[in-house]
Image (cartoon, rainbow, N blue to C red; front, side, top):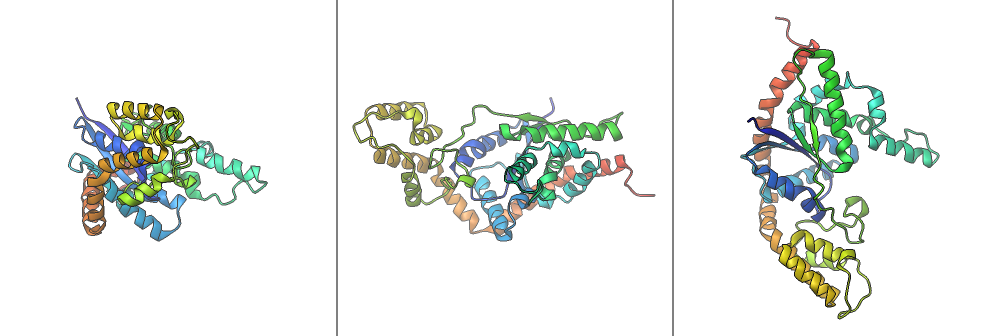
Length: 338
């Protein structure tokens, strides 16, 4: 049985936080150890330019995110870990796909539609501040996926459309250029309904856009200070508390085993004080990430070593992308004259 090829993109904006770790990084790293899969993980720095036009921030985020995944145990022997911009075949394939992709498909992209709707609601020109990057990035995403023949693309529910668009574009390319022997593998999205979505300091979804995150690799004292900021009610120690409406308990469940979860649920019923609960939460989180934090700090002091790992990954990735692009170019009629 041939291996399933699984591809995961990691946008290089911002500093990784606990929500990223629990919802995406931890399950993805566990999946990277599955020898039944051929896993590709890439730092989507081209995509980052759509959201961020601060060069220093993009560069720093790329370093931090690469160090985070490596520190947490990404198996780079079993998985291919590379930076998108190190694969020069990606922009070329993006153009080939753009030439078969209908504008109407891009008009329906959620991010673009959302930006247009927001402009209209504010009485502005529909395309105010909308770049071609925002408009056409689903084609770049399709190139990321189709270049490597991904069978499965793990995504959140809000990202399903991108995989469906990649599939539509692949079908169109195959229909026009490769009717006898399809070149593009049709990808499928993979949604894990059991992945936790962590609440942030204010009880909303933990997100950089809300400014309510807890950075993943804070030193222990700073981690405690952040956890102390979690919004709670005014119930005093000794008064029973509802764990199912508590951000503190929700974070606890994301790091605890079944016994620890049951014990904390009972502690809430017995009226544990918020300060004590937050102190125990900090200790639990710190226990899981302490060793990885040391590895992260060490890696951040050695950026050249991170770069070397990314270049090794790019070499492995290009062993796939170079022949794939050659086939795509041949299919459309762009190849040597000899």
